[in-house]
Amino acid sequence: MKRLLNLQPSRFSRVLLGLLPLALILLVYLVASDLRLAANPDDKLLPSLAQMGDAISRMALEPNRRTGEYIFWVDTFSSLQRLLLGVLIAASLGLVIGLLTGSLPLFGAGFSPLLTILSLIPPLALLPVLFIVFGLGELSKVALIAIGITPFIARDIQRRAQEIPVEQLIKAQTLGANTLQVMIRVLLPQLMPRLLDAVRLSLGAGWLFLIAAEAIASTDGLGYRIFLVRRYMAMDVIIPYVAWITLLAFVLDQLLAWFSRRLYPWHGKGGV
Image (cartoon, rainbow, N blue to C red; front, side, top):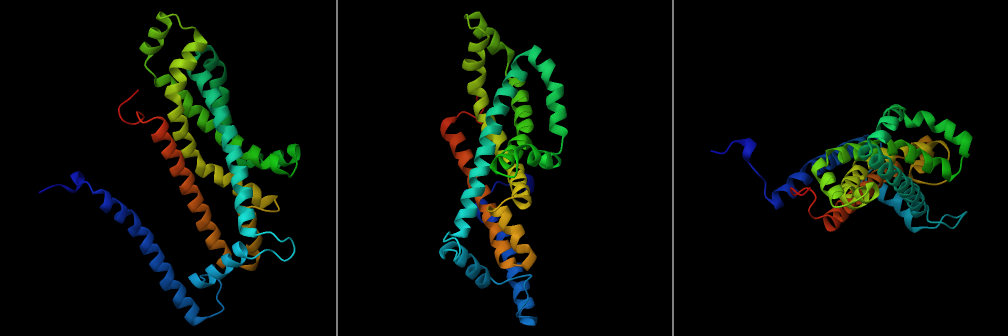
């Protein structure tokens, strides 16, 4: 008899088991919504699927009477633009800082303590400073995302660089490679898949900083819309927006995983 510890689900079973908790949550919500609406048809706390569908349909498929824009898609585009730009800046800075501090001992000794201190500063505490310095426009929102996740990515890349066997560096130098060549030809190719992993892990924090910035000072965006309609208790808009953000985050995560498998098939399979 196999122990539970050793049981491995098949691919189909894995998908089924993954969907089961989601189905249970949906079932509980539907039952609770039906009970509340039966007691009070005007209840706004737990709207039905039909009510949420109607609300999102108006925002996604009907142009705004004042601006002529499709609000749902404008919010989505604005938020994705800010998030992707902030993550791109953070990934670039994190890679450079992590590579330098992880491969150059002198550089690491000088900047590692500073990097550790910066990683301990709550990024949301800097939001008022960013608004004062950069204004209430796009730059402050992108800067918050970049500042918030760059230290995490940099420290992860630094650690990964330090884990690369020193024998590889010695061999490259024995063959005549200088410092820059070792960093570009030996370290960088091995750090790129780790960078994608670090970006995947930091996406959740990136969404948090984005929504916080949009909620405080913005005229569009998914976070802005959620905090705008909360004053009306418009749960038929808030819940679909939260679900949409979750779906977008999942799709971005899977895209990064797909790129990692395609570009670096050796990563995670015992390769160095």
